[in-house]
Length: 319
Ligand SMILES: Nc1ncnc2c1ncn2[C@@H]1O[C@H](COP(=O)(O)OP(=O)(O)OP(=O)(O)O)[C@@H](O)[C@H]1O
Ligand SMILES: [Mg+2]
Image 1 (spheres, rainbow, N blue to C red):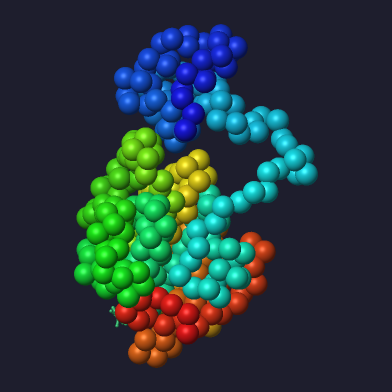
Image 2: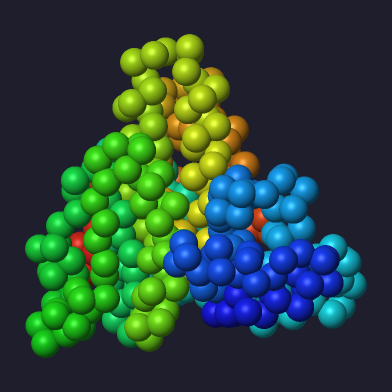
C-alpha cells in the first residue's frame, strides 16, 4: 500500500494546498493512495469541497503516486509481464487460462439454477483460504453454507484444517442492491484494514451480483431500466478498479434469461453492461445429476473450449 503522504510532492507541483487536502482525506479514514483511486471524482470533490478541475488534479496526483503510467503511455516492451494467478479448482481450466484467473480481472460465472455457480465459488474460496490467503464472500442470495464449506474442506484437506480455513473466508450478507452498493463502496476501507492486519485478500466472490438489481428494479419494467444499468455499471467498474488496484480476482455469478434466438435458449442477464465489464465470461451447463460442463463463453486470447467437471463432496472437481 502507498501512503497518501507520497502524493504531497505531486500536489505541490500542481500548486495545490497539500496540507489541507491530505488532512481532509485522513479525516475520512483515507490513508493510502489506493483508497483515493477508488473514491472517484465525486467523492474526492465532496471530501475536499473543491471544483471538478481540482478533483481531477488530485486524482491525477494519486495515479502518479501509485505508479500508473499516467498520462505518459509506456512502450509495450517495457511493460512488466510478471503476472500472478489465482488457481481454479479445475486442473483443465487452469491449463486453458495459463495458470488460473489472472489477478486484476473480473470473472463472470453464469448458468441456470443448480448449474454449480455457488458450488464453484465455495470451492474457489476454500482453495484460496487453504493457501493462507483471504477470500471475501458477498452473499446476496442467502445460500452461503458453512456446512458445505466444512464438507469441502474436510474432503480436500482434512478435519484439522476446518477452523483455520473457515477463518479466512469472510462473509458479508447483503439483502438489497443498495446494501450491496454500500458494501462495494466500503471495500475502500475494508481492504486496507485487512491488509494492515497482515491478511492478503486475493479473491472477492459475489453470489449473485445481478439478482438484487433485477429484483428491485424489475417491477418498474422498462421505465427504470436505464437507471438499473447505470447502477450495475458503477458496481462492475468499481469492482474492476478494486481488482486492479489491490491485485485480486473478483468472481461473480449471474443468472440467465430466456432467449429463443440463442443456441442454448438462454443468455446471461444484465445486457451489454455486464458483457463489457467482465474480463472472462464462463457458462456452466447441467449435463446429468452431478455432471456439469464449463464453457469459456467470452475471453480475450482464449478459444471457446468446453471442460467437463462434476459436483462432489470436494465441491467442484475435474471429471
Ligand atoms: N454435498 C454435495 N455433494 C454433491 N452435490 C452437491 C452437494 N451440494 C450440492 N450439490 C449439488 O450442487 C447443485 C447445486 O449447485 P449450485 O448451488 O452451485 O447451483 P447454482 O448454479 O448456484 O444455482 P442457483 O442459480 O439456484 O443459485 C445441485 O445439483 C446439488 O445436488
Ligand atoms: Mg447459487
